[in-house]
Image (cartoon, rainbow, N blue to C red; front, side, top):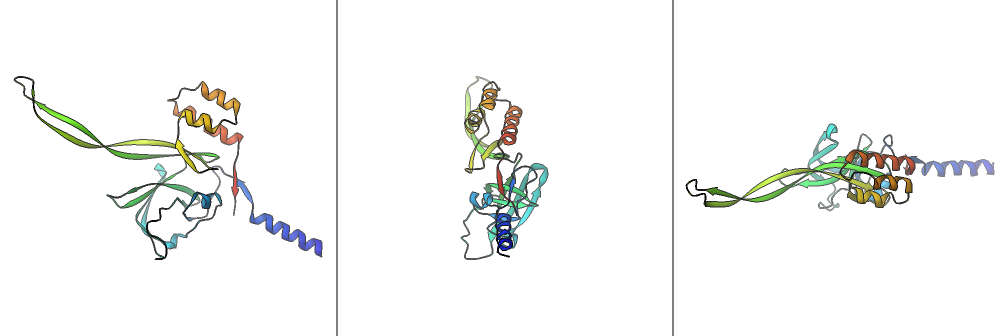
Length: 216
């Protein structure tokens, strides 16, 4: 009887800390994660019912936008920025807040593993001096700075163990993959501008160095 009880307690305790490899099939409980630690623990801090806002999901772009994001519980600081959300079991990291349009934007993992990747657009303003020239003498007679918005894609790699979000480039991957000599050797022979090869290296590293997370 005593042995049976001990076995039951052991199995119960083990089930509470069940692990599963973090890959494309891994699923997170739905909700809002306020920190990287919460994501690693697979434990959302808030249910969907705890927040306000209107959600738009753009799965083809790995994007989720929540307009007028806020918290229903007045005890929660309204300025707290969410770290990530999970929708249909898929994690999306918070990447930017659009003040003009009033929404929070989240982007999903393109690759899931010890090294995970995300991709999103960022917009910045450029200033350029424009001049008008007199066709008679070729001299400028009017000039002014013109501001224009430019949108560029950003590729990032998330070191899941530490939470560090870094540029997806060759120098970064050489550091992150330092414990895999064979892969480092291959990376050193890789064209730094070849994003496809860098992504292949990340997937290979994830296959060789799987990371397990709590699974519920």
